[in-house]
Image (cartoon, rainbow, N blue to C red; front, side):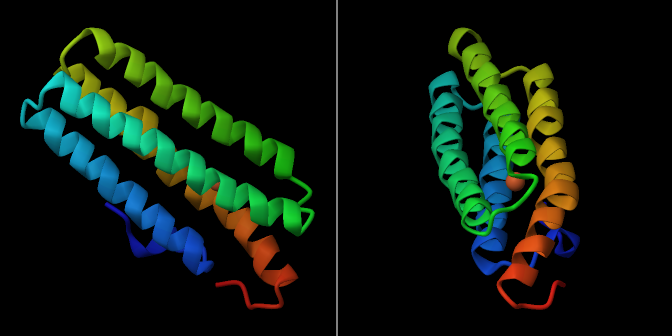
Length: 136
Ligand SMILES: [Fe+2]
């Protein structure tokens, strides 16, 4: 599901994004295959932890280089973590339904794609310039 157009040009961030999409694919596969609630919840927990680490990487770089839109970017990240937590709450009480798969697609995958294509790309362009590297 990760596609070349999502490249931001900072290797560490690109590889974390790829890993995020792989995890999301596995999560969807498990839901579609009728995975157990516990299994899906464990995957969401893992994803949640990974996303926290990933956002810390991005925000750390932005702080280090005094990115002017840091606060705005950080608030977007908080919104995503909130979405993961809502899905976790949902799956804590009921088995993954078809509707749940739809929400994973919309709330997580679509969000991530559009976040990367807009705000992550803008931040990376700024960071690459600050680091003396050519933006992609
Ligand atoms: Fe971001």
